[in-house]
Length: 395
Image (cartoon, rainbow, N blue to C red):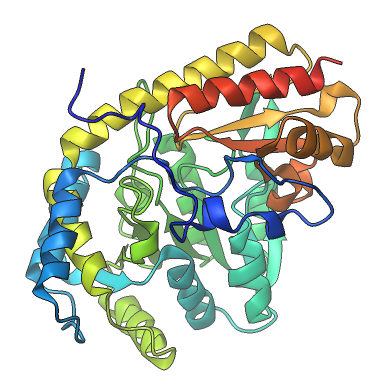
């Protein structure tokens, strides 16, 4: 028995939780009242005690005025964490603090592309890339869909190269590890994507927010580590998924090149986007300095959840295909062989099983007929969820 009790059911209703208190509006046309929320990337586990203590200590001071810019303690915590977990060597001056990764991507889109330019993405992929970062800024989403081959997602490099070579394609948003399909990209895959982008002068923004959540047998490779010194590359990290701190809006963006960093920070200033949350800074430092034991226990627990759900669905629902999760805490499920339309599939999951999931079509047309199930919750909830799905689809 470890230090942390991930089996504990913690009541989150009425606590200002988007996942639990505000999800019905995400599913227009469906009755999701009373559903178990297993959608947004938010864990139902408490943060490490060291993080809680750091926040409480800050709260007890009683004065919450404007904080200074991030300090050396913040930078040291990020730098040491990236070296410990990913053997990534960076300098403190490369670190830019932002209030989240999606805003950080937006600043890059605004600074390194112009209206009408193309931004490359790999659907099915995290939907804010297209909706919030690209379309909201009047850029064009250039899609390089992943290929499903022998039950595993792969990159269509021929298509990737063709689209990167288009002179209107200026930036590539990489999701590593990939959300929602759960792939941990190999060194070779990453190096090939970087090489193609460098050859075509395509800027890379590598979203590595789930990089700490890697299943046993797989290893995350930072995109920067295979970049060969390509200067037009930015990488994003945060403790938000790893330690369940998303509400504290604190991320660490790694910008190695001085000129690129200067432009990036200037764009942030134009958006009045500077300044950290006073609690977020304390939480990040505590998480990265003291959270390794928590993470090791968490990874073991998550793997147990994922393996249980995967095996249960494989054994009980032959027409539903789960994909082996290599990284993230999601299970990506393919319901297309059920012979149902995607709306019928959604209705069965949302209304009959009463499980609120991320619907496959949110991730692009390549996700139609799929669903993303968030397994970062107590095992008893996972067991209940897959039993409900079985019951909904077995008749």
